[in-house]
Length: 77
Image (cartoon, rainbow, N blue to C red):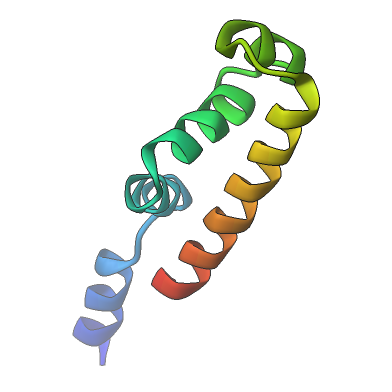
């Protein structure tokens, strides 16, 4: 019983590992947008300026990426 419990704990992924796995499974452009927003704390305005698109377009792309993240996360975990 103890061995099974230890094995189960050893194979559990951390939250960070799960996030990395999901980002890796996503379309590269969507994953990059989420990295910019959530890891590097870029504003939608900054992303829009750097990508040469409108802020509303960036906002919509981020929402689409968030939905994709959720769907992949639920599928994987």
